[in-house]
Image (tube, rainbow, N blue to C red; front, side, top):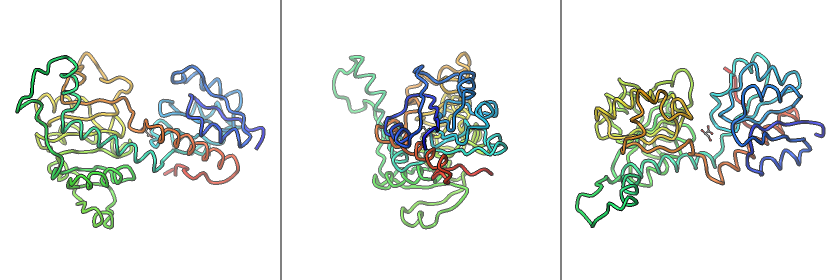
Length: 331
Ligand code: DGY
């Protein structure tokens, strides 16, 4: 509908922007090339918008919402996770919040989980660094000995869409699968021979523990000192969910004491800082058995374009008075 205005906090793929423009909206995109400042976002929203398309790096609190009201109707988060949005504040203000769960994104994140698992098992990053440094002087029977994945046990904590997409791939590689979730999916268990375990048993059993849960109060520091102590000394942790799901200081200690074998991290507790307090535990970045990627699990051309389309469709539905396909349900 003409006359509607949308503010987008950073350049996103055209596929979504085109949809908004075709719907007749006037679209303004923040062009600073970095995350928008909280105060700038407030200032911009005060000029009057019907919809806000924001990123996981934007803190969407009551002050931001109030700046947009009374005109603002919908806040479309360009992410599956929405822990950056104050849902209570949104509920109080009767604002619509949406996210971007999409099969394309799920597949991308699941592929990323597997790429971290492969890289840890076959020590790809360490071996790459070694080779680039000109240290390879000839074949050796014991150079960068890793391990096969076949027959190893993948433990999924959080059997949502991404967890399931990860299981499907792991089964294809002849890995065994155990999982823990607040709800059991017996049909999925049968179909993929996945075994439901308590979180405690899962941690004791799995060779690779993949975290696929949203960040909510119950999952903050889901893995901390006690949990690392339960894990096998040969086990690896993979975190592509949200940084604070892992107590990073406890992870560093577990790695330093060789209580676990390594970690694949796409997210960090104090993101974008790699260490919350670099003076205390800068060592995480120095560990060869830790692989890090900068929150890029969904960074494929396909996934990011789909996220833009999904976010745009959510806005179009909300501004047309319909229920958006991915409206976040308030508790
Ligand atoms: C998400 O969607 O929540 C990812 O963390 C970023 O794509």
